[in-house]
Image 1 (cartoon, rainbow, N blue to C red):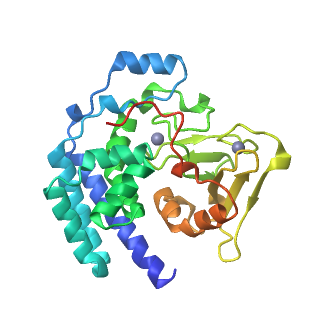
Image 2 (tube, rainbow, N blue to C red):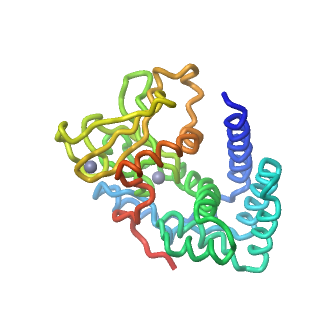
Length: 281
Ligand SMILES: [Zn+2]
Ligand SMILES: [Zn+2]
């Protein structure tokens, strides 16, 4: 592992730890679930999340934000000033953390671009922050409702819990099945190998993969019909398969996203999601 990669991996692991701690602090009552609505959605084989049912405690969210900033300052010494300004923006209410989580979830690029300009940041950084702040909330929601659905019978290309497109996939070491992974709620579900998760295309002539010389561990599965792709790792070929951490894999393969985009493919997680319900306010 290169030095730079090792530092990023350590950063990722510290953020993960902060996330786990935050989940322990989150109170059960903060996630309100309308059971009747959930039952209705299960009956019509729909995904479950509705943002209206989620209540985010402001203090809790600010605590998590501060924990993240503390870690980021340790690892990104050159950016300490920017991180401090970000903290102040939150204190001055120029940055609303709950709104940020929602805007990232619904991929409101216009909002993110404008806010980034205002705060003199990159939209990418806000995306990273919103995703990490939202993770424990979505994961807790997923934990609460997961046992209600039959994950094995879910055959759609989007997350059964929150409706997001998969950010990563892997071939499972036990049975070679393709498993898709959601970057918001960390849910995993199996999906046919010879089908596009985004447009259901099954024409093998238009489904293929590529990989780069620098990285033959990951393959990018593309669909020439809808022009979308999913980064994929083969767990059977990993040195330590049980250490598979898809959040890390996703972050550590940003170079592949750039190659795919250069080749004319669309990152499915950078598209306003058609299938997600709810309106951002
Ligand atoms: Zn999800
Ligand atoms: Zn497709």
